[in-house]
Length: 399
Image 1 (cartoon, rainbow, N blue to C red):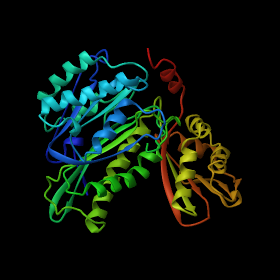
Image 2 (cartoon, rainbow, N blue to C red):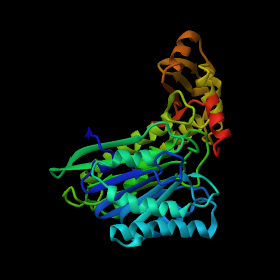
Image 3 (tube, one colour):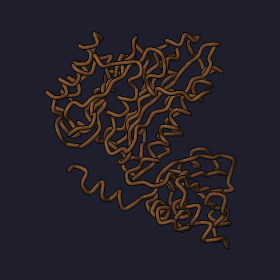
């Protein structure tokens, strides 16, 4: 498997574009991703009971089985906007379908930004009419720029690998910086591939990849109304169609999982106000579910995150997060490490160098390892430090 450039337009048959339509003052705010041919599609959605109009419309359209395009706007979430929000989301798909010459049900829609504000549809209608002629095979860069909100950088990743002697590619783009605590699942992710794979297996592979990537990150314990991970597979690579869980499915799933994991880590790294990426490793759990639950509990702890920001080796906060994770654990068997420095054993502190601990916590990437001594299962979660700037950003989000 090789890492390649191009993001969502790295696989064959995809074009993308991004432009400024007027939802934001100056930055790009409208993106379009389109496949040359109908693509199998699958998606995971937020479990928040408050769900934005684009989530509902995309669910309806994906029930038809295939997609040609997805249109995404930033700067406005189109959430908590009632019937008008639904009408606007459907109008966005209708406008794109008319320009592309496809069925409305073949267009998905996603939005991100401020909740509770109606979309300026006149501006969006003009933007959609303008963006279709700008679609291009290297437009992934522009699309990835147009979906950002408080993000500080574009988030793209792509790989290629061999299936049946054919080169298959998977590419993705995502956005997310705040309201990140997905339970699928303000994060959005779009993944494209030219692999030939049945829609049911694409959905299963996406579900598995999401469980170990996007569902293992946390910035602020807030689950958005708009979270969505959407995948499209257009079969243009020419591999023998994947119809069962054999060697080809495993290779595809591994590559999909790699793309999803790298995109998820980029979100955690770019948490609002963050200065550090934190990787939480849990090992020795009694089950995979237990390992994931404990890793997510530690990654979601504001006390752990502030300790990392302050470069304070307060390992007790980590152990406390293990204790309230909901997993039956014997604290007397737990070991805790910061990087390669052990700070606790048998549920108690051990002598360690505070200077060495501060040096480890001062890095741009910080690893926390918890050994449970209860089994053979392991999991990894990612988060970031919680800083003064997070409060500043979210205290004035609408201004």
